[in-house]
Image (cartoon, rainbow, N blue to C red):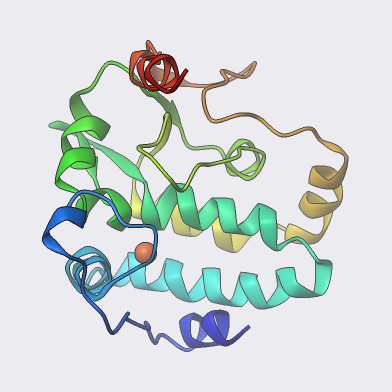
Length: 196
Ligand SMILES: [Fe+2]
């Protein structure tokens, strides 16, 4: 609730430690590089800043409904690992991607992950992994649309619906998905094979 309260009041909290050189590509805990290099530039976009505020307010509400897991996925797949479709093509806006050199290339260019058009309910039903590159990225058409959907969604009935719905694995394709890229999942398969 401390985190959400900061966001709802347009404050962003940053980590106070920095990663080691050998952790340049990925780190599970948010360090000052991730927070300042990754998040802060996005906060200068007024519409995106409004989204962060709306998310903070949504978080405070989600606490009442005991539905934080679902709302956390929205943050994960937008603020941290979001892609946006611009006239010139797909672009990164997620801070988790931006603060990883390896994932910046992977998210846009690798044939492995799925890239699916953003849908609020679909995103909230999708599990994520915190220990490796994502196997699905959700693509918004604009920050205005992301803000609009967040402000206009009535979360109480949505949470009730989500309670009864099954979750998707990151690599799943669901009925009705707006598929931009159907991933080969080669990266994940290779990893699994080398671990076996
Ligand atoms: Fe972050």
